[in-house]
Image (cartoon, rainbow over all chains, first blue to last red; front, side, top):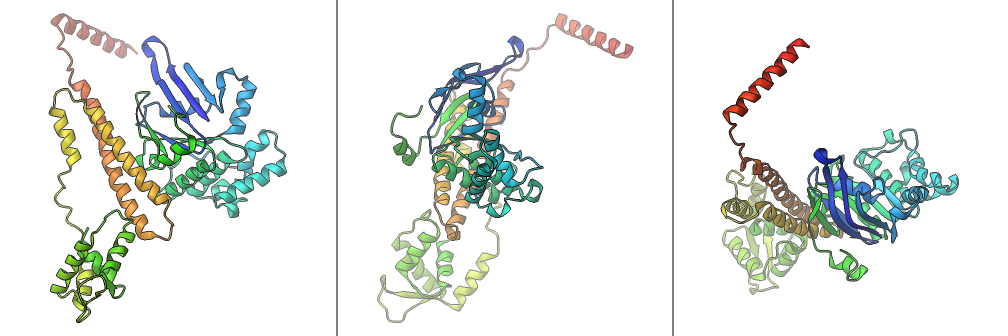
Length: 238
Length: 202
């Protein structure tokens, strides 16, 4: 589903050159949750923004569902972002003037889905995350845990195939953090490919595989779990 | 883990057989702490000798012998629960010793060593997180055991993170700055003086 091939990203020039990401290979299949773990400044968040097509790599390629993102037109790339990729951030990034269900329906409506249909899909996504009774609440009427669950609903609503999360439990206590990770894991089990970046080992341990980054490079990986490996077949990952 | 007190706790629910005690102990701890039958019977015999449990009068030794908690056993259980375990003396942690020893062994890349240990700990943590993910929320005992292991491993991984940060910082210390030559010291003093003059003019 997501494939990064020899991806590098540099900022600045000559004396001020910063190598944020260096020659990273990563393959994440449908149904799989992969954690990218590393200290701050290790390049993990930059890698996530490149995977999400929010930033272009300096070299290397990003393939989503088998298509090289660099070969897409700007419009096609924007459509891919809206339709296929869901993002979850530490700060939930919900729009304060919209209710939970309107927040979840928004990306669908922006993509041309009629309002009624978008709201139905949004409500179904909220119900899947146990938030059916919070659909008409505004973000300031929701707890931190509920807000992040609304953000996850927004990230998996419709036909999303790739879920990207940056420290999704960073603002939550351990109970709410655990329930958010249970939901991310469940979403991936339903066929979405998931990548979560974090410095937190507890959060990373919810993933099927953990990739360790330091100074922009992948320095280590845990072996894949037997269940996921047999699901995807051998030789499907780097 | 005190097997003795765990058995007293299980018997506080009512009389039980030895085999049943073993099964309940393992189920309650998610088979994280396996217990063999011999350990169970030996512990029960000692508890009986100390008057903390009572067995069925006249029953034969073996799986069908039933045990129940005595009054003294109940008092012992309650008085054990309250006081904190002895945390005054730090345990001699093998991993800490390994990293300390590695610092003195020529040719060992300590940062790589730290990473190898971190990966293994995260793998073990994945095992307990998977156990937790697959456990019904009603099985509180098992969830508590999994949490305890996850928090313990997390503490060790955090220590490794902080050790790595210290060691990487230490790389600079291994290359102390070379003392400046007298000419270079003069040049630096002149440029500092000029800087102060400009500052004073502003």
